[in-house]
Length: 355
Ligand SMILES: [Zn+2]
Image 1: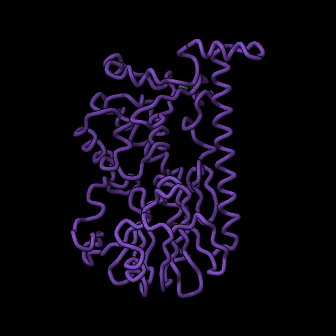
Image 2: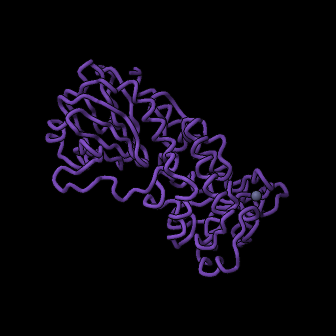
């Protein structure tokens, strides 16, 4: 799922294309894409408004519209946005279209249909987005932007010291810090040499500083590299390149770039978590109560079950069980990467004209 750097890249690519454009209508082919309105009310709600800004809050795009309104666009797993001439052939995965007065269209393409688009009012004084009737602020529960100047080490410490729980889950919690998801949580923890299951309360001041610098550093670098084009993420100006620089994410079985030992994978809260068990140690205290999670480990070098021994016997060219597991895991990741790259290329091909 696109995280802060990916959504930031989409916002930057869309800004020069959309700011100043006037929306004349909207077509929705999958009504559940709309978070706040039915398709007719949505089309009426956006028609006649001009795009004033394109920004981001956490993992969502925020398109500021004239008349104190705004759209939020959550790409979720497979959402993609393209601006194209209206006569461009529309592929079956386009769920919503904003028609622009100048003959172009903003198309929301979303294979898995988890993406959400909302239309809200904007408080003219604070600029905060509010639901039309309830009046509750849309981003009220979202934590600070990690790349903002207001997100200082002092502020990070203050927030961290109020929290319990383990680091991976904490970093994914959008009320703790906005925009970090699975990729950059794993990368930040590897960079700061902290185990994903480490309890937040056990961090010493130098650990806090390393984690703070790692979060900011990896997100900043990823924005510079236009995000990680993993799975279906692509932006109007093309794919990102951060995926080539990731140290642990989806590198199960590949050598750690610091110590050479294989990267491990465990499942925490149904999410894959990638780390180096040598560089990111876990204390005995934190190990307690995490045994069920640690049993999900894969990546070679720890468990030697009979299934793996069996694998090693089949045409393994003298490889050890660990090496076979590692090789098959790497091959699986490579297949997943190739399939995703093919899907992104297909998306691009189906959106022939570029806006
Ligand atoms: Zn390592």
